[in-house]
Length: 141
Image (spheres, rainbow, N blue to C red):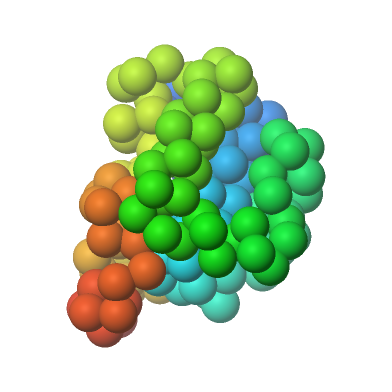
């Protein structure tokens, strides 16, 4: 299932498969660090997603301590995670267009495979991360 998602991201965004895998890991790591509902849903539905997020986080030097994770869920911390995530995606070889289509491609796969709606917008990760109200809106079709 993880391989299918990575192949979908690669073909949707014109990326090589290893680049798509790294990009997915970066996004999932950033989403998890912010407490985003996106991460929880993908982790539950896609075996290996949590491992990919953790491995990629270790490779890019993402904080792992409990206190750091709490700080990353504050408004200023989320802003820092967003900036570092975009920077890591650029370092992985994605341009602005590929970064902008990355979450929608994850969302379209989640919709087609798992019937999940309301996933795949930058707001799911960035501006609404950790919002309890937003978490309740993410639902199965």
